[in-house]
Length: 273
Image (cartoon, rainbow, N blue to C red):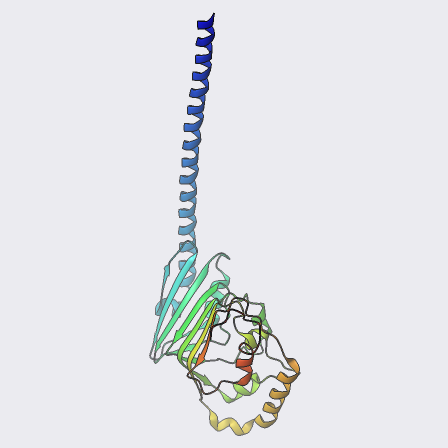
């Protein structure tokens, strides 16, 4: 009887052991299959992201001709543009492109010019734009979106902004129309720039006018008086909760208001200047 019971116990234990082994092996195999399936799904999704972005990018002819695009991560893309001679690209075309792309995608954009021109209105808002770097470029239409209320509706996604050795080419009417007044304010996006940024660097910026001979056609004296009154009354606070690095250098047109927005406030506690 003892041996019988022992045998049963052994069988019982063996049965449990086998069951556990089978269960364990089955579980490990299932986990392995799930992992492989997830990897396959990620690969399919990555390819779908790549295919969708590439197809849309090809549709913006100037950009696809002057820029190279590459996928640097599952949802990350890098666009590098070299604008030479009489060539040019427009930010409005890039905005239309990003509007058609899946919401989880983000873009890093680098634009270097060799005597080229870019039409990029400040503050360079475009949905899904994560990083923007502009070097040695002549920028037109820089102030054309200053009062455009639609710009505030574009998500503020820029985390890193850097401009080096750029020249903004302004028109007299564009400048006059962009000066804020009580009944014609500039947008928050214009005044504050990328409020979610970790780094804002504006290094070496020059301003020239392509039609300065038209200066006498506009009452700039009154407009600039209204400009001062506007900022004395308006006093908008810009919030830079993520900002670590802020640099403005090599510029002759830095306004007190530009500096005050960041340096003399407590809205960027982590700021390094």
